[in-house]
Each structure stands twice: as C-alpha cells, then as structure tokens.
Image (tube, rainbow, N blue to C red; front, side, top):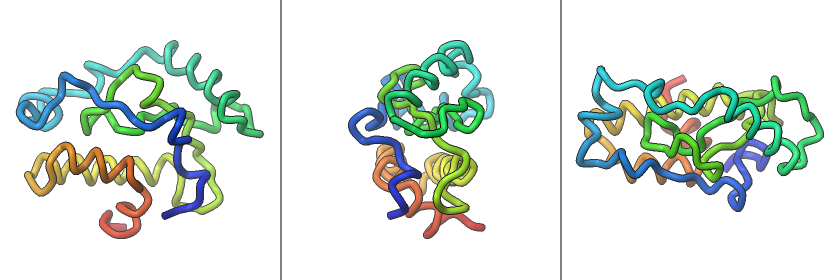
Length: 144
C-alpha cells in the first residue's frame, strides 16, 4: 500500500463501472481495435468543472486545476463509468512519492487492459485490482 495521497477518498470516489461494458462484450468494446475511449469520454467542460468542485471537496491545499488530472478511478479502458462523479477524482500529478501520481497510474491502466484483452485477467478482476490498490499492481506487476 502506498501513501494516502496517491489514492482517491474511498467515500467520495469508490469507483463506478459502465454497465454497457461486460466480460461478455469486451471483444466488441474495450478490446476491439475499432473501439476508443474517445467514444465515451465526457466533454472537457464537464470534467474541468467537476475537478474544481472536487478539489474543494477533497480539501487540497493546492487548488490549481493544472496540477491535477481528473481521473477515472476505474479507467474507461477497463469498463469505468465515464461520467459518474463516484468514478472521477482530481488525481495529483505530484505526490509524496515520485512514482505515485497520475502518470504511474496510467501505466497500471495500460498493463491491466492488456491483461484483460489477453485473457489473463477477467474484467472484474482487473477492476478490483485497480480499486483495491493500483500502486501494488504498479510495484509488483508493471514492468519498469
């Protein structure tokens, strides 16, 4: 487990999944080369506004929006809900550890997506892994 500042508040942002993406249809959705997160990604106006609200709710001392990525806790490429505020949080780029920010989590998302599409993990398993402790996956499984 990493330090608390690399995870979303579990009450505010427990994660939420997209009911349109299931294990049964991953080869037509997230694992299809024709599918793109752009097809379901919310408008920047929505996420930018939500980011400002959530920075205040989270009580971050740094209130500069540019220092955060409005991140999907369960990523879109793992069947995360695109617009549910319970799946979006202002993830800091800079954290108390050098590899604990948004860019490191992105590597976990890509790794788990590849595992799901290769059949090594089920969609549910990957969603659980990222919400349980994405940093453990980063340190133990993601090639550096």
